[in-house]
Image (tube, rainbow, N blue to C red; front, top):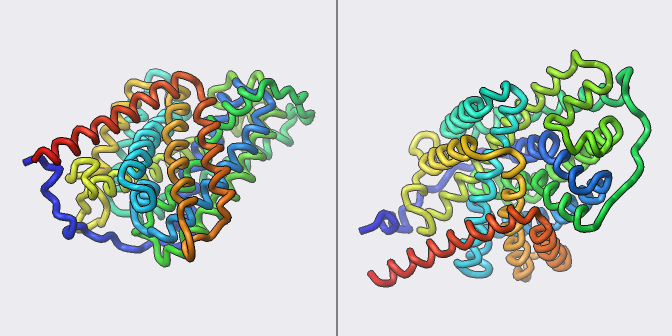
Length: 424
């Protein structure tokens, strides 16, 4: 008999509730800050110029709508798995599978993006792939040792990266060569602005990592909504400051072609001695994002395995460290394969595709909730779902085509698995 059917449902092992609000906020910020600040502003500038500021506002509002949906659903279903669980419970198994599969493929791409970002900042070109492999292996080992260690390391990483970021922003503004005149506002087409919003949405996706830790936070009905909204608010303010400083310092054209925008901004301000500070901050931020991403993806994979939508071996929880150790090891292996074969900008669009589909299901699921489960007005969820669809279809066509192909492949796999089960 296949391994899909060896684990009885009543043998699911519960996880320990160890995390408070501050821990959850830090894990969410660790996932967001690395992606937003050090990766997405260059490709956003390439498609929208200074219009990326409008794209940032659109992405932030869609993210807020999604955050309210995630918070409302997480309060009702405080368990690992996020929208995979919410979709199953509110809409049906296929909706849940679509959300879970989209999350897994999108966030594995995000893991690869963060590993490659880390390597871009800390290693010469010839050594970037080995550096990316090493950081993935190291952070999988940290996650394997337990979620409290994940939270503690995330706290340190967020402190280091935000401190370095603030120093970089200050130097870029007050340095002897700093430019203090804002460039002309040339927004370009609405298609470019919406595409920039879809790319920038990649930067906001980390807040839902908190919801995927639903089985591991104390008082989840109170903790999860607060942590999601606090982390998102902090990130929005920070991103807006960074976007304006980069546009002033580098201008939209130079920003669009920059591999390391904040380092280039500091250098342009005339204080090259501070570039290593930015490098340290970028390395810490991308490592922090990768740390949180591995935790979130592995827990969604565990939840899907519990329902036999993935091999049940991935549902195993370590008897000592209380983490889904099989899922974490598999996620790490797939990410290592990706960083060996992909480039940084290519995976951003693919990741946004998967994550936006995930939140589309979250918004529809939250919209269907009634009575005491409802915490926010329905119009927020309706706008969030529509926003996800608009941003998906305006992503680069390669991301859309490849994303549709992988999602359909996953759905086909589940259909075959169900048919096999029914035949037996």
